[in-house]
Image (cartoon, rainbow, N blue to C red; front, side, top):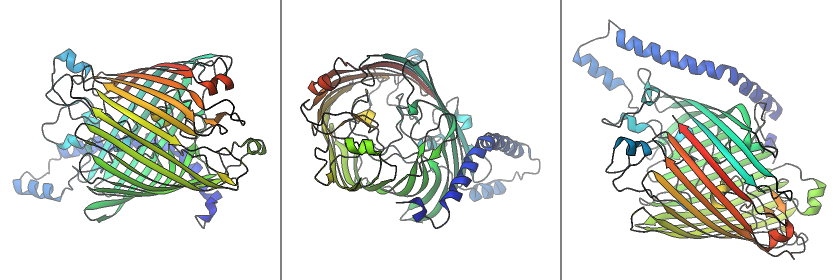
Length: 557
């Protein structure tokens, strides 16, 4: 599908206007933030020093009655439970290292805007600070820059994030030379959020992502210098069945369901973002979204632009029948007009373009007391390089929270995504993972993606104390079809035996992570991953033994 068929006016003109707008925003966005800060100071000072302000109780009552109730603004969307979700500890204890140092033993977990973990897929515009309007809430040093009241009906917030990560990799890209790769990454984010009542929202977030010191060339997702992560406006259209309906236009992150198909991809230094239009409806029982987007193309030294060769649109509905349970239903389409080279066509490497893929799926997830469960199924159809698509994927698992000290929990899971073994039957059976958080599900080494794969896996977690989270995973990987490629976490084809004689056992991976929650704003994450080669890797990449070690520090405000 060509983008010009979607809109009757010139796609070239839109692209030119967008580039000018984004480029100019690098100049006016900081000025806008400074203006908003100045405006807030002037407004607050005016309210504090106005000598003519009426002092009668009746006048104050009238002002209070005329002011819009901002306590429910913005209507944030909490991050849905992923697969392999963890039930957090709830017993009395120290919920941060700072709590332990200061002797602040709590009877229950504190109310806090951030999850107590270094990785946070949730977008900054969905972090919930509405608890600040509750009398008696726990005070914090950054409260003054949150939910600033700019007179009647206006609300302004600022926030940000910084992380540093050191990484050591061995055979990280299945390179026969066995080159070690030691490098450092820095990421800085800052955002401004302005609301008028519950009717209009302006949200802007910048990002600066840098990597240095590596022996191997940095990945595209490692670096993006001084660019825009989110820049959009929300406009309220109506209230339907006690739920607001909004339209959001501009650059924005997307996160849905289990994140197997659509995620912000917080593990990478640059995160994933899109540009387009989304309409969404929120009620206590239902969330319904419809969107048309284009993914952003990262350009390290230039202003990012959207990929004009890809159109991504869909409809996603989530239903909460009762507390602790969620149902997702969705239809997604990816129209990818990027050309596949004749060489890749001859090799059967056709997943990166020339396709129109439709995905139908559904998901059940929840817990019944200490019993945890999840089931998700996805079917794809359409056209790929003049071949009919018929592909599917299944993810299922059960878990249990043991009634023991240290909050132990265990999952046993199976993940499957179909592959293709015949290039002459007129069909393409390889599943397309779209825009996933594959890193979370298919091993932290990122050697395996949700395409042409069997993954028998297990997870065990515990909290030695409430502020330490320990997570261990085991994966046993097999190719779904011996003659199709092994695809990595980015969906790229890496290794293949067209004869199928190398077997199907890719290898076994172990992953260990320990997160130390320092305080509300700070976390330290330490991890190690190792893959033991199976017969497929031993024959296709002899001598390869990938492993990964990393340490990450993260602070949010």
